[in-house]
Image 1 (cartoon, rainbow, N blue to C red):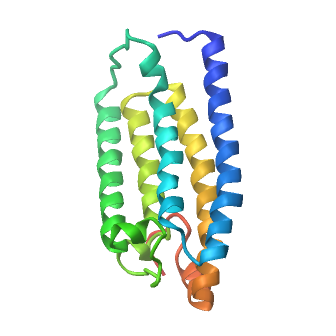
Image 2 (image 1 turned 90 degrees about the vertical axis):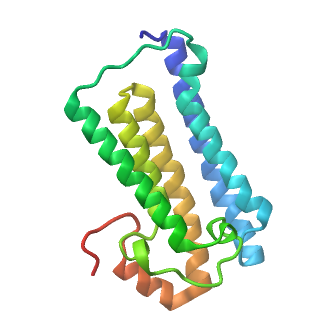
Length: 193
């Protein structure tokens, strides 16, 4: 499928706007809520879904504009690789949510205890890693330039979110969190120390 240059530029501009807005959203609004309340309010925690919902919408934006969506043929090795990466990513996501616990805890609303067990021994941010891997797996199964652009923009947005959360976690758990950060990588390392 061929895209007009206007659409490509418009799509890239939307991604850039999303990255910029997310930067200010996390660096100002979310950080200030953490500093003021010592946790996220329910509204602030839930508002993060809006950022990632809009990001997901942009991934499928070309599909909404083009009714003649082509069938993409990938080889057996690409299909198996994409399927394995997607399956692994879903496992990481599920394990991350199960280990972290109740919904309000995953939203940053209730963070009274530092989770350092289970999958959190391998990564301080397994949900972020899992979703990034899911996008990469989808990019292998359905290769396209806009999934690649979406993966890059997700990396910027998620990293800003993580840096904001790390400031909060360090202020909340002090030396215990610093020690955890020294043992466990922000994203992934195997085997754990």
